[in-house]
Image (cartoon, rainbow, N blue to C red; front, side):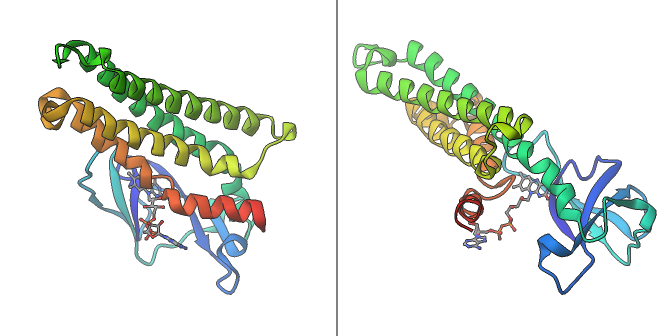
Length: 230
Ligand SMILES: Cc1cc2nc3c(=O)[nH]c(=O)nc-3n(C[C@H](O)[C@H](O)[C@H](O)COP(=O)(O)OP(=O)(O)OC[C@H]3O[C@@H](n4cnc5c(N)ncnc54)[C@H](O)[C@@H]3O)c2cc1C
């Protein structure tokens, strides 16, 4: 069984990585196969009831005596990692760009609210502490966006200095930025932020998704460390 597969309940085709040489480490002994929906032994389990990012479904894929014929093989036997490696350079940036959108939406909400909410005799946006916070949010968004752009460009031009950590870190950076911006936006809204009608809590739930999705950030740091030091 594999949990949490994004749109797993909707897909018609799946790429499945199977350990075909059991004595070898995962990266050496796996083979990639194309799986068609409806194949005998393959079924879809629960669709998870998620906290946020609820327009994307995440489902369980269940395999029970499911046979994959050789004609469904993608790439060479035992070389599944090579197939996966083709997606690596861009998939982290794709996730990073998704969470960056949540950060931008939160930031805009914080600015809009700070303009209309009057406290201490003037709009929040005229208070130094709030102004500085709003600008720090912009800095986090701009820096994350630049990092994503750089990773995307180098993924397409790998001979210009592609560095494997760019396949792990942009999502970690953007999701950390989004999470900080989410909690600050909640704070700037005061009690209103906690109320569903204002729409901040929905974005806070969405912001949490990419702390784990596409790899837990802590494990992405470990992965990048392996790229750097091994
Ligand atoms: C919204 C969402 C969408 C997803 N979509 C997909 C998808 O489309 N396809 C797909 O294949 N998967 C998908 N996933 C799964 C996702 O990739 C995994 O949940 C994620 O990689 C973490 O794995 P895990 O849940 O098994 O956590 P675990 O690996 O059990 O991690 C739990 C904790 O242990 C820590 N940890 C793990 N290993 C180590 C270690 N070696 N040393 C120290 N600490 C460690 C982690 O950092 C984390 O804090 C999705 C998950 C979510 C939440």
